[in-house]
Image 1 (cartoon, rainbow, N blue to C red):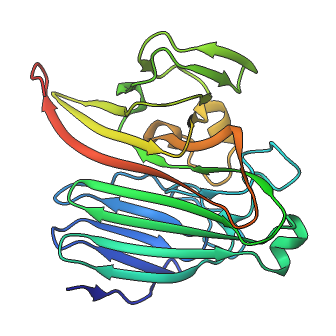
Image 2 (image 1 turned 90 degrees about the vertical axis):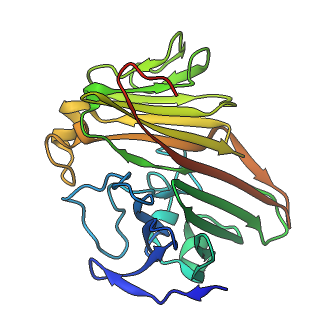
Length: 294
């Protein structure tokens, strides 16, 4: 048995307050298909949203999980990160099931998008919460006849209490493009976050990643899995760049780390009628006392 969830408002914008029977909850805006909040069952907020971000039509939101499409960053002629994160999406489905909460949103081309990017497309974003897990799936269909190429990412801002106590496992051995130094490098060991700006695109990510954060005697662990996305982007503006961002507190960089599932190095090409889908999932593994093993 399922129960439909009605549209409400959050920060003056249409929103869905997603609920799972076990207590997990999430908030997603129709603006940008933007996931703002995810709280696992019995847990605490896992996403970072800047307290200084604007909630306005046509503007991107700083934090949560912006949907990047059809261009990553400034790698093309469009506005930075494309237009999907600042356009209104349609709600297809929002419901509480027997053991989960599910929302499905859709974005299709219109006259305004075709002026920027002359292709017929349909994006579908599916969000599922249950227990300690969040699943985000982004699908794209070429609704036209001619092929098109696009990049995409789920630009996930993860909340941390102290960036200096945070590390990422699962990156060792991977090649990455360091956007700060404009160089191709290799990750030799697990990532201990460096001082200053971090902006890296890791290629051919096949295994799970784990965000680890030491919180006193406790170790918080968040498992991150992706399918359909070949790259993982890690980003933190660092102190200097963060201070220059109008929509971030000066010290905001210390409470967040972006770990994004992305297709950047090799954009996706779809022929007419073809579809593609990619997923990023998060599982809170819980806190482990110092000295214990899982």
